[in-house]
Each structure stands twice: as structure tokens, then as C-alpha cells.
Length: 248
Image (cartoon, rainbow, N blue to C red):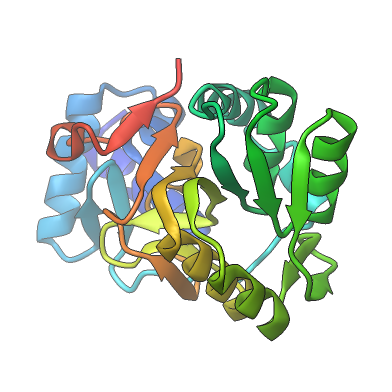
């Protein structure tokens, strides 16, 4: 494919999604990573896009305000989410006091959990039921139930969380980048995530690689406020060595 045509395709794809990764472009355009990086660098210099780690965003980056229902999100990147969840489950140790955030990737952790002496606190009704069925001690925080994500949110949930101090916490995110950190579409969910994150000694973000470069309206944590468990490194990963964990 000629350079000009390939760069037009990159911009068209970027217009559709708001952000793209190098891997997505290499697969879509059947080009090498070095070729795609050169194209992104040229387009960045022209002001046609903004080159970021792992790919590019629109020059005036879109904010993703959509929030899919749980049933749909569970099937998105399912294989990667299960691999991430399985690894995360191995981090739970004897007598841990664990916060398990609402979300599809955190839910995939439950079948892999084996440490029965750990205690779990969650804001997800479905998580609480499955954990209880599997023989774990569970604390479900009270508050308002949000139908779309099946999460407990609101002021009562926030007040409940403030009294706890977790040894480990596992959180989902709708988007992740260096500038805005971890983001989600809903302010109420963001408040709960932020509160729990601040009360956790070792917080982990479970994030499949499709979430990199995505930005939602509300931030709940800075990029380096938690370690990230994902399925592959973004570009320029050496800058975050030790901060990002790849689930094998």
C-alpha cells in the first residue's frame, strides 16, 4: 500500500475510534510496526493526530461517554480478561483483606481464587453471591444499585468504604492513559473506585490492552497510583517497567 493511502487509512480508522494502537494498525493495514510508527510520526508532525505511547489519538481527542451493559462487556476481549483475572487471583495471599471492584474482569477472578482465609469486600452484588457460593467470607457494601454495571454506588457506599483498610484491591477501568490516568464514564462509580483505591495498600488495575489510550469523562486515579495487570505491553513499555505486569 502506498504511503499516502496508508496514512489516509490511519486517519479514517482514527476518526472511527478516537484512538488507535500500533498493533491494531499493523493488523488492519498489513504493515510492519516500524512502518506504522513512521506514519504516526509524520502525521503527528503535520498536526493530523497526536502520537502517544502505544499508538495515537485524535488531535482533538474524543472523550468516550458510552458505557456498555455488563452482559455485552463480558464478551469483549474475553480471552484476555480471563488471562488477566487468573494471574490477579494468584496475588491473593493468606489473611488478605481484599477489595474486589465491580466489573467483568474482576468477576473473572472469582473461579481462580483459592485462598479461603482471605476476606473480600465488594460493591458488586453478583461478585458477592459468587464468592459466597465458593465458600469465601464476603462483605457487601450498602448503597444505591446501578443497573448498567450492577455496582453499588452513592453516598452511603462511599461512607461505608472509608472505614476499611485493604491489603490488596483489584479494580476495573474503562480507559487508561498517562494524562488522565484511570477513567470511567460515571461520576458515582468513580467516587467509589477512588475511595477504595486510596484505602488499599497494594492496588491493581485489571486492564486488557484495548483500554490503553482510551479516556472517559471521570478520573479515579493517577497513572502511577496502582500497578496495571494487562495482556501485553504498550509501545515504549520500558518507561513503565515494573509498573505494568503482563499476565502469562
